[in-house]
Image (cartoon, rainbow, N blue to C red; front, side, top):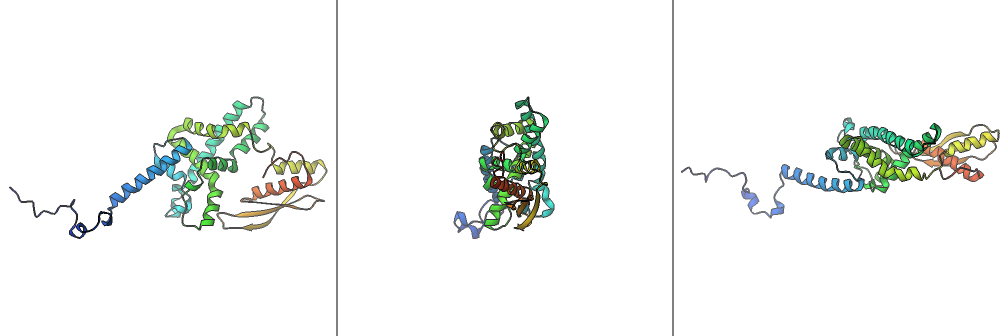
Length: 273
């Protein structure tokens, strides 16, 4: 019989490891990968419970929450949420358009368009993501705590659209439609904003009094390039300027218009911000 006593046994601990505690023995690359995948599965399962959809391809879910700053190389931007956001934005628009068409049979094109714009705007998407508890799930690169918190809030609406895009790719249109309907139907029935935004209301009010169209000007821009903050003033002839702030020029302009509407007591301004 052949003597195998001198043949090395790869499965047995090395002499220098035999005397070490079990938790002190170096972990193999395969074991690390297995442990990491198990942790990712647990994390993914928690997110899937929140969004109400179980993914067949878990990488789509992971990509939907990955900011470009978390990538090892800026060249691999396709591994961030951006492409999924592009897709999800258009899927959301189609699903909501269909919902509105069916829910408001007497609504004309103008009314449906205004309702659509309100429901698919980034702020509404961010509200949905916030309600689902997705804020802290976003994967960022190495940024400071304060910058990270601001960045998460600024991309929250984008992440929501990316989730819709991921669901569409993984489960098709019916799955994406179900997600959108579940999270948008009450918002469609009870809009939190007036159908006319503050800039439109202010412009119509000024024109009704024979005044020139309101003029918006940038007063200040602060913050990093990827997370700017704007202060905008609106001027109407014969009135003191009013200012508003926001994470985009558009949002700051609306805030400025709303400030003037509130100060001047303009009717139908609503709670646009």
